[in-house]
Structure formats: structure tokens, C-alpha cells
Length: 387
Length: 107
Image (cartoon, rainbow over all chains, first blue to last red; front, side):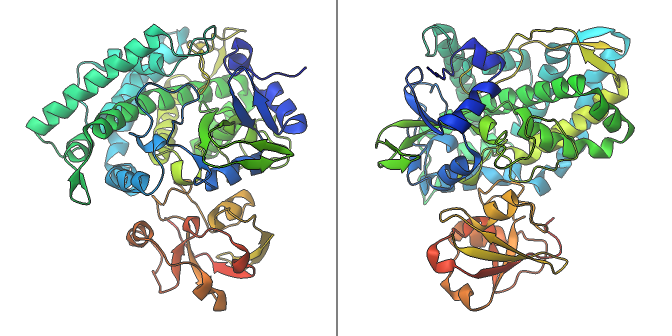
């Protein structure tokens, strides 16, 4: 009998065979381990994303939600509140407003890559992506320098879940609480000494003449830090893995870095780190002969939609010439990732600089240590060796 | 499914069956139509799915909300009276036969 347990280490390691069975045989599947429905076909996911009135985010969007977060962040509110909240923040993330960051991001990538010049073998996560990611995020959000390593460690911890209890463990909650206290400190400091940065503006913003709820300011800031650090870092790791595993693609890219944007899009489709998010039904909804009930949770398996042969021919092949428009690597519709422009730019610049120092490499570990997470998928360590 | 005709910047017309509930942007992206970028993925945050709604059905498309009107201020091609962000037009049976034209540039 088929089962799909998003808490299982086997799904962390390789969800794709499970996804294929879901798409082909159980397109509207009740996972008793996750206590929610699972949608896995591209067209069903797009329909759900476009129908936020039925598939609500207001009860949380992480597969394993953090306490008290639902209803207070961009990802966990529905329009119209969501749209007003997003309106306060999105200008900072628009492509045209990020141009001034291109040079600092390049400098950060070059600085982090330089010490790798003498290394035959290194951990891409610890030695490159973790350091680069916090530098980028601190620049984007205007966070005060000094706590970068700890912020990164806590962000990576708080998105994880315990495979045995299928819930957040004490260590994950402790990291979440630490991040909230850290965010509260930054908010208080920016209110005392406002700067021309996102958190200063956001922490003093009003909607329709009302100050934002304190919980919204705190948890939205906490989430921006978490999402920025974990998502960008996780995706960089997956991109490096793809470059290590697909030597032909990497050689083409090293010879012609203009191919990087296409490779980034294909990686977002092929195995993006944001694999699964969650919605809650506001009304009964029938699909593929099943009736999902009002109040039921639904997993949207973006990672499966991105491998759906009904949408992407030969979907299990990594092909940087594919140009997979409409992929679900950033989700889609109202709640599409806020950081698409900064992510695309940062990954491109990171690998332009990284490849100058380390152009030829392979992966060392046969089995990767995958992060235990029901939502995200990326390796905790990625040993690369020069070839 | 209602049909939408997309006119690409080169003048080619592409007719697509668009599921009710999908945005006009979404179906263009999922079918690889040229002339649209949709950088932000449909959250009305980038102004790169700009289109011109052509013909009589333009009047049948629900009016743009405040957020879309503000974002239309960021389009790089000429903003006209029939300019819309295609991520904000949701497909309904009433829009069968809709025609949208993409501008020469989105960014």
C-alpha cells in the first residue's frame, strides 16, 4: 500500500519516485502521516495557487508550522491584508531597486571564494554558501553586522522538523525564539535610530492610518531573515550539487557564464530547495473523485509539479537549454516568493565568482546528509573536490 | 475551457485554452508564449507581465485594483488606456475569446 510521509528521511533524500507515484496513481492523496492532502500535478498546483480564496494561507504555509506565526506574516495571511503588508515591503525587493546591490554582492562572492584558491577539497555549504548568504541578506535587509554566523545557524535550525515526532522539536522552537528576540532587538534599534533600510521603514509603517500590529512587525521580520538565509543558502547548495553532478553543463557555463540564468531557471525547476508548502481549505473541494473538506490542510508539492511529464517533457533530465517558463520553483500567484529578483541575481553572481576560483569540481560524498525538513530540501554538507 | 489569443511582440498569434481561475499571465508562462517575463511569479510586484487588452472584450475585464494601478506605473513600454498586468486578469467563462497583446519590452 502506497504511503507518502514528508517527514521520512527517504523523502528528504529523494522525493521524486514518491512524487511520480502520487501524480500517476494518487493525484489527490490523503497522507495520514502528515495529516493532510497532497497535490502533485502541475495543473492542480497552479489552480490551487490561483484560488487563494479556497486554498487559504491564513492557517500557516510551512508544512510544519511554527507557533503563533500564522496570520502575522506575508506567507500566512490572505488578501486584502496580505496585499497591503506586501505593498510595504516589495519595493525593496524589486529588480530595479536591487541594482545598487549588484557590486556589493559581487564583492561578497569574490571575498568568500578567494580562500578556496588553495583548497583541493572543501564543504561548499560551510565554506561558501553560508558565508555568502548572510553577507547578501545582511546587505538587503540592512541588519547590523556582528551576529552573522549565529543568525545563519538559527535560521537553518528553525525550518527543520523532527522525523520521529513529525513536529518541531525543542531545538527548533529554541532557534525560532532566538530569532524572534534577535529581530526584536533589530527593530528596537532601528526605531531608536532609523536608517534608510527595509526594517526601519517597515517597523514604523502604517496601513490605512494604523500602525502595524507588533506581532506582524516582529514575525514578518523574523520570517524575512529565516526565508532569506535558509532559502538562498539552500538553493545555492542545490545549484552547486547540480553543477557537480552535471559536468557537461558546468563546463558549458564556465566557458560561457551568460548561460547561468538559464541554468538557474532549470535548477529551480529540477530540484529547488522549496519542495512543499501548505494551505488550508476554506470550503469543501472536490478533485479527482475525492472530496477534501473545509478545514483540511493541503500540501502543495511544487517539487512534484516541476517534474510533471504532463507539463515538462522528459522531466527527470537536467537540461540547461530547457528554459522552463512557468515552473513552480518560487511557488506562484499571490504568494510567489518575495525574493525572486535578489535570488536570481545573487546565484548568478555567486557562481560567476566561484567558477573563477573553482572551475572544475566533483562531489565527494556518495550519500548526502539531507536536512530533516518537511518543507525544504538541501544538503547540510556538500563536499566538493577539484578535478 | 475559454480560449485566449496572445499576440507576441513579433506579431505571431497564439491561441490557448485557459482553465477558469488561472490568470492570463499563468497560461502564457505555462505555454511558453513570447513577450512576457513575469519575474515575480504573479504577486503583482514586478510589472513584467504587461499586456494590452484588445478588442470589444476589454470592457468585460474587471477593472484594475489599486495595487495593479500603482504597479502599472513601473512598466517600461508605453502605458496605454488598455494596459493591464496579465497576472491580475483571472480567467472566467465571460472572457472566452479574449485577445491580449504583449509589448516589445518588459524590462
